[in-house]
Structure formats: structure tokens, C-alpha cells
Image (cartoon, rainbow, N blue to C red; front, side):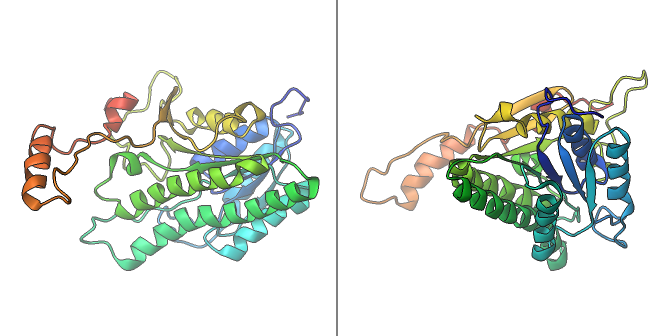
Amino acid sequence: MSHPLSLPLDGLSAIVTGAGRGLGRAEALELARLGASVVVNDYGQAGRDGSGEASAAPAQEVVEEIRAAGGRAVAHLGDVSDHEQARSLVELAVDTYGKLDILVNNAGILRDRMIFSMTEDEWDSVIRVHLKGHFNTTHFAAVHWRARSKESGGPVYGRIVNTSSEAFLAGSAGQPNYAAAKGGIVGLTTSTALALAKYGVTTNAICPRARTRMTEDVFAGFQEPEDGRLDPLAPEHVSPLVGYLASPAAAGVNGQLLVVHGGMVAIAERPKVAAKFDSSKEAFTFDELDELLSPYYADRPPNETFAAAEVLGLKRG
């Protein structure tokens, strides 16, 4: 994997969290293919719920795969939900490659349960890994870019790609912790986009659909192609968008949420006002609200929401 100057990420360094398997692995490989030097972060626990002993194997295997193709990569085995380990992750990138240019936040776990059955620990653990994990790495990357910008007296190169989910857009009855974390990541993304733009840093989020160990239950009914074609839910459909958002070509893309899967990218708009009602008096009364709102909702389909499966064109096999 030699890196001619024509490669869009040549000379840039990247961190990809949760990169030992699934989406993160595909993203790390894609960034390396495009010329980036990569820090492959993965805590390496066997269970998708965050259980099991931490292992160096998943991250190291991806590192060896990148190196075998001629790329540059090092492994980091820390837990991004730990503030100090996130600091060490960013420091490893800076110490190894001289600077950090790209941060892809992907690490996460699942502990699914209906809201009436969920334990406090099941809630806290998912929020911690997804939302706090995104914050931790973003914080230390932002400190790095702000310091470099002040030192140089102008903007620097910085790209953040966060991982949200359609569980936030469409709701997911058995994943209140996961949906809340992914919604929080969108809020973190838009806030960070505004805060870091003046330093030359862009921050965007993706809602990917991919068949990984995290989603094996979700996509159990969607059959993989039997004719050798690439699975529409393969992570390799998602990673090119991450590569684009990490590149100089995406300098004008900031604070955006993009849904991606199987050869499709949809740009999500921020919520719009669907209807507006004004009080005829100084303040609303119960009766006036009943007269205005009840007919409005009576005329709308029940549980009207973002029809994710229809928008993405998914069909069950």
C-alpha cells in the first residue's frame, strides 16, 4: 500500500475507535487505503454488551492487515469511556505521527431492554461507552487542534466523524439507552461543529446500516446475496463516506447528519416546525389547547415518525 501524493488522505493521521471489528475495522482499512496513518483503537472485549476480558487481538489484527498492504498503523487497546485512556489515545496519535488530523468515533456496546425492564447499570454503561466515549476523545482532539491553531495563528486541519443511529431518528422500543445515546451524539456533533469551525475543524455524524456483531439480531431477516454480490448491509458500503468526510474534499460539510447504507446516502434535515398555533387570549387555556391540538393529531396517522425502512429501501428476505 504505497501512498502516492494523489491519495486524498496522504500525510494525514487518524484515530478510529472500536476499529477491531465490523464498521470500525472497515473504516480504518478505508482511511489507510486513502493514505492516512491510523491508530486502531479497540478494547477487545468479546461480548457486544461489553463483557469479557479485554484483548489486544482485534486491534492488532487490523494493524497487521494495514501494514501488510503497505500502510502505517499502530494499536491502542484502551477504553474510550475512560477519560484518561481517551487522553492516552490522542497522545499516542500525536506522539507517533506528529499530529492528529482525523477522529472517527465508532466504539459502542449494546445492552438492550425495554424501558420498564432496564436496570440502572444497563442504562449507564451504554450511555458511558457511546456518548461519554465520543465526548472523551473529542475533548482531547479539540484541545490538540485549538492549541495548534493558536500556535500557528490560523486554522488547522481537523475532521471528526461521529456515529449516530436510526434508533435515534426512528425510535427503537427495546433500546432506550442506545437511542438516547445516539441522540446525544447528534447534539454533541452540532455543538462541536459550531465550536471548532473557526479552528478549521469539521464535525459530522453518520447513521450507518451495516451487518456487524452489534446488529446481527436487527438484520437477521435480511438475507445476504447468494450470487457473490456485495451484501447491501456490508460495512464496506459505509466506510467510503467516512473517508470522504475525513478528506479535504469535505471542507464545506459541517454539522451534518447523513444516513448511509448499501449504495445510498441520505442527508437528514434538522427538525422543522410542522404546525403552529397562537393563543387568542393572553395565555392558553386547557379548552383552547384541546380545540386546537386534538383535531390536528386526530387527522394524522398514529405513531407518525421517520419511516426508516421505507426511506432506506430495505426489504426483508
